[in-house]
Length: 492
Image 1 (cartoon, rainbow, N blue to C red):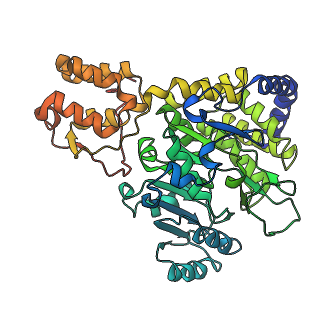
Image 2 (image 1 turned 180 degrees about the vertical axis):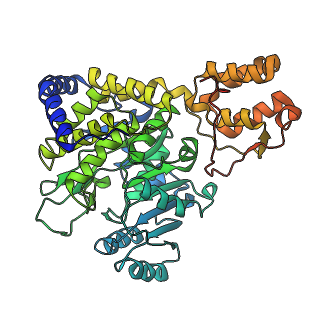
Image 3 (image 1 turned 60 degrees about the vertical axis):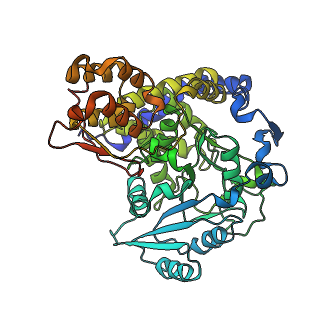
């Protein structure tokens, strides 16, 4: 891999910012002024909304007696929290108290201690003894705090111990938060009122430098003494990412790399789901360790974010606009410069990227639309356009075995153009694919993997599906699968 000095990258980053900054900032400002509020044109989400502090918030989480009126079976809904943590003794009790005092507590809370060396294990044991729904999973100490992909590895160490089909919702939750007592009650009410929401969250705020870890009074109607992390409305935030279990299964879970919490929201939109966060006061929460501060420094965290944007596939001009905006947030100026440093250093060194080319193309088209129309309008239009892909029903298909190369292609179908997929199927099975199979292919992005495989097994017959010694078994458990795709056979 080509190595580039930090000085060269910094000069290139600053030059790019100076050359493009003024025009991009002016265009972004004008676009935002012209744009409607996020999802204002998406009637499904905000048909019955009213304005609350400038935000378009569903009545479902503003009026009294929400659960009784909108969610008559609220008491039967089940959610599971999965919390990866390491050395969180400073904040753990505050998060543990916030969750155990929820008006709707979790059915299960898996806390993965990723090799803590402080008092975290003792604190977790104390709360696990008091609350039966808390289960602690221990991992050996790897010697360092590994962010990004390491966090997701720890997450899956907990997630893989559960049967996701037993829960309506699953949430990746950090152990450095303070949240309102009704947070999960209101978030689930919101999602149940608007079924296309696949993942949602509130907005994070943090204490200004030097303020210390002071107590707050929820709901956060007055945020004058806090700093907003200014997270976009088009994603749920990574520190408290609540998912419908079916949506999480459909997108294939989290990528095990930096920017996992950006990739997942775009994967939701690819499948027709909506990813969203709200600044409604009763969903605002405190992030005790602000985003991007890292376990080392602000600079390290922002550089890592820049690399993450590169890894995800973000277009250079969009990265410039993002860095310029981040220059206005703490740490002022240097935060945006650090992001550009991480992005351009990765570009010059030709670092690895997220392997799904179709995803990167989808992402860049969306980013260009954001630059041209403004993020709110672009997101609303995209969500309306992909609505036909949405398929919320849980699959009840029994495990089906199909030929391995065919199965591998199918499992990766969301990353392939339909014409390439159909060509690959015809090449392997001739005209036996038939018109009814063609109809299945047309609906591919609105079907779950299990349903596609079941339909193919019916259309191609068990002889075709089991003609080889090994196969790809796909069932309704929602568990992740390792798949290796023969790109040549997929027509790529």
